[in-house]
Image (cartoon, rainbow, N blue to C red):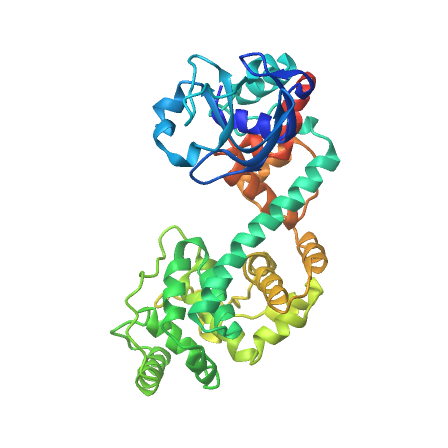
Length: 428
């Protein structure tokens, strides 16, 4: 028995509320369970209940054992003086309130059905030993519950990304173009070089990006040089020109030296090498002078693909890095990579920008993300083996949120699927 299960039982009234009595025999009529408090202090604020007909309003504290009241030092904390009911699983000791009178206590185990308790115990029986606790029963939850929950999970994940955008907005004094450039830079760097690319973007003001993009390969030279990728010793005339252009731009715009995280090649497939990704990022900004406004106006996925379909400069047609060459092959952004940019940068920005204008574009966002093919990774693949689910990016983003924020922390009591399985133990 864990305290968070008691919180779940009390909050959702998952017990026989029609026949409640204190351990001293006083009749309890529950009017309101109160507001769940996630911070310090009593577990539920402003509860309302009648004890032997007398209406009480105040706070409720829950413990597995009544003796935890003293173990936690509540008798010395004024924040607990207004507790009107002590809800416990087992009353192993009498507890006294601030007036030295016995605190009214409800022993919850008397009023919880064995079926509900069995459902809870079965769900957590596999904790830590399976992919997810409900691995054997995930397919048993009704499709309507699962789909509603996946949409809620996607919004949760989107809200987390919006918080990151709001932080960038504060740093840039509400410059949306700067925020877009910083986010695109991070995502062009993928997981391996995301932090390094973000450091590069932060040390180049966007007005400099705009001006450098007006020079032939100027922005590419600046990004490669700022990333410390241009070779110090070279006989390549193209690289020499890039080095001169980079030196000129850094001096002209008085740019600070980039001392952020170094870029990495290790564990990267050649198409993700930082040389190519920085060239492609430069190509995007060289081709699109008003990228943010264009992206905010687009609604159809195919238009996004046209807008973002750029390739690295011709120098990289025969290279992945400086030095060794290969048979000519243009280094175009793949549709899979563009999908990741849509999921991690553009859709969150569209959502945040609409909110800043006090408009609601959630329906547009749902339609757009549902039109993007599903991501491919081990977590998503395992969920898809457990039951049939819509094959789109909304589903895969929601499943990642489910696994990271609910399944791994064993937060089944906060999960709608977990709630269903606990309340319906006969199906598993």
